[in-house]
Image 1 (cartoon, helix red, strand yellow):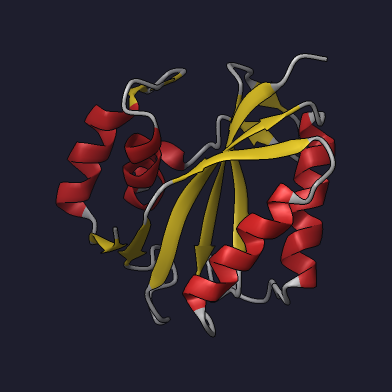
Image 2 (image 1 turned 45 degrees about the vertical axis):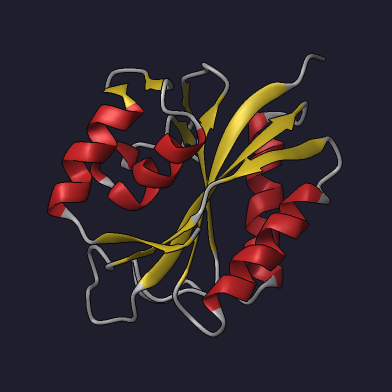
Length: 163
């Protein structure tokens, strides 16, 4: 099977956020059939939805994979569980959050998985780092990532953490 280029959103707002994201990237790289080919800089971002929580560090990783989308999702969820992710408050604090944003050019609409990620067009914390990795990428139904990221960054607090 040919390698698919996919993008994974990573975020943390509990404990050592930077270390959590580094550890998660390493764990993603250790999934059989996955090769991490790029990671955007970290961005400090305000929480959305449930706002009474610490700010997040977010980034996006580019991977090459021959793992099927649902299997990849299950591997990402396993990493979240191993890193102590607890789902008690919707959009609440988390040690790590891993979201499959794009899987090649595929549109997937399953009860367990929707790709492109259904809310990525509303989230500067996803689109700003994604645009740093691939400015020319387009999201089906939304348009060019760089343009959408620029518009959202004016409305939502997104600050580069470290270059």
